[in-house]
Image (tube, rainbow, N blue to C red):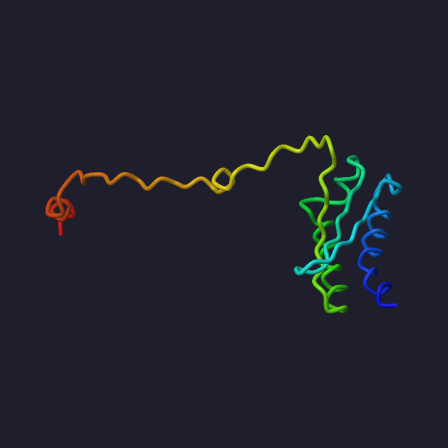
Length: 125
């Protein structure tokens, strides 16, 4: 009975992912347990990666959030890893310094065109 309860997380991921992809027969969900908790590893057809990840990762983030809820209910830490399929054409991630917003260079200190005294004189006070 305990094995059934432990595999709810795996069954959940399999059910949700098969429901949203075009190639449900290609969905593979593996479950491993280590000192860090439960790791659910998901493999899908390369054509279905966009559906699994969603816009800006929203779908994957939602599935991970629900897995955390399932894990909390069972006093376990559950993580989801989505395997990148063979032959993926996703461009490599840029290095951290390339993704940071470009820093504006501090303006070079300009020499004042006139002294403080001259500026006060120009005010005609």
